[in-house]
Length: 390
Length: 162
Image (cartoon, rainbow over all chains, first blue to last red; front, side):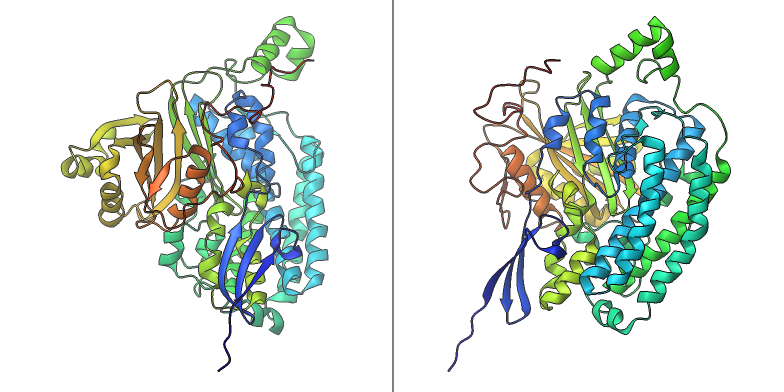
C-alpha cells in the first residue's frame, strides 16, 4: 500500500504575498494546508525598550515606524495616551485636523490593503489605481508635515504647526473625487467572478472564535460583531461625528472586503464633516509645562527659546500612574499602555499592535484550505510587519 | 469611583481574600490580585461579567522599586458593556512563573509567548512556550531593566556627542 506523508514548505520571509518579512512554515498534504507556523520578529527594533530611555516627546517619531502605512493613526494613539496621563485639553482646531488626518490615514491604509490584496489574488489593475489615489494622500501628508510617511506631525497638546492654506482645498478636492474611484474598484472586483471565487467562503472565522482569538477592527466586524471604538468608546472628539459602522454576515474574506470598502466611504464622510467644522484658532494647548512653545516665540524671545530648550532636552515629568488608551486604527485596536513612575520617561510603554493579535488567527482561518487561499487570508488580515515586530 | 465599579463589587464579594489593591486613575480601574487565583478571577470575569475580549496581556519590570519584581497586566474589555478593566498580578523573581491564560482566551497564546521572550516569565502549562520576536538561541530577556539598551557586550550609550 502506498503511504503518503506531508511536506514542509517554507514561505517567506522574502515572498511577495507575505507583505513584508513574514515567514510561514507550512505543512502541506498535496496543496492542502495542514499546519501553519508563523515566524515573526525579523523587523524587531525594540521600540518598547527604546521608549523607556526617551522623554515623552522623543518617543513620538518612533511610533511613525510601527504601522508605516498608517503613521498618523499611530501618532494619534500615542499622543492621546500621553494627553490622558497629563490631563491636557486639546484646542478644537487641532482636534478636528487630527480627525481629518486620521481618517485620511484610514483611507490610505485601506488603499494599500485593497491594492495588495487584489494583486495577491491576481487582479493587477486595482493595484495601479489604488496607488494613484494613495499618492494624493501622501501629497497631503507632505504638504502639512513635510514627510510622506514618517509624519511626526501631532504633538502632545495639539499639532506641531498649523496646516497651510491649500490644505482645505486639496483635501476637499480629493474627497470629492474619491467616491467615484471607490466605485471603480467595486466595478472591478465586487461582481468579478474570479474575485468572488477566491474570496467568498474563504478564511471563515465565526464571531465567537474571532473574539476568543482577539481579532479587532474590520476583521472582527467582517465576522458580524458590531463594535467600533470610534463609536463605542469615543476618543479625540469622535463623538461629534456621524458615521455608520459596517458589519459583515458571512465571516469570510468577501465580507471583510465589503466592510473595508464601506469604511472607506464612511471615512470620506467623516473628513467632509471635519472640513465643515474647521474654524480658525490655536492648534496647540496653552499648557507650558508640557507643550512646546509656538515657533515665533522660540525665534523671537529668549523666554521662548529657554522654554523650547527645556521641553526638548528634559521633557516634562508625568504624574505617577498608568493609563491605557486605544484608538481604532485602520487595522484594529491600537493601544498604548503607559506606566509612569513620576519621571520624564515612561517606566514602561507597551504597544498593543492590532496586526500582531490578528495574525494569530491565520492558523484557524487557513487549515484545511489550499495554499492559494492562504495568500488571500494574509491579504484579508491586512498585516503590517512593522507593528507586529515593533 | 473604583469602589462602585460593578466588576470590583463582584470581585470583592467573591474573591475578597485574593484582592491586594483597587486603584482608579484617570477613569481607569485597576485591580491587583494574587497570582494563585488569577485564572479563577479571569475566568469569572469572562463568564459572569462579560469581559469577553482580552485586549492585551503584558508585564512590567519594577527592578529595585517593588518587592516583587514583575507585574503581569491583563487589559480586559467587554464588548457588550463597552467598558474596560485592568487586572494586575505581581510575580516574584524567585518564582518567575504564572499560570497560563490560554485556556480562557486563545489570544493569550502569542501575547504570553512575547512576555516569556522579552521578560522571561514562565507560563505554566502554556501549549507552545517558545520565543517569538527574538531568535530561538537568544540569551537574555531584552525588556528586563537589567538588560542593557545597546544589547550585550557593547559599550553603554553615553548620550549624543553633538
